[in-house]
Length: 174
Image (cartoon, rainbow, N blue to C red; front, side, top):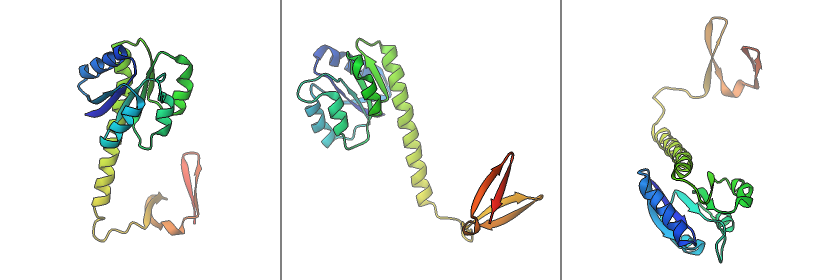
């Protein structure tokens, strides 16, 4: 489950986002916030993967809120202001939904976020496995095997100066 929060100062817009989140079985709504300041408090206490955030809000707007984040959540902007789209994508937003947006548009944006979340989870699991799995006994990880002239030769990594691609072939410089 992707843990998310929704931030919007407009009650109707916040209610719509909440209802969309509840309809998606891959999302878990941790909190809905009426301000970015309230959202900061939630982020300090909870582990959040995805943030749905409006841009035009009092006290702290959505763009500045995202700029101030010190953790890496996925961001989907939900706003009525198209003029901030470029800035939103410069902040690595997953998507930028213009109000009023349909459930289909919401699902498309969430699909991107969930795909990235799953890839990150898979990568993290592979790193943990690789770090916790010792190299087999007797295996020497200092060599690379090179197939040339119908035979396989072991070459020490430290002996390689550079590798050059020549069409379909690779030229090894030692």
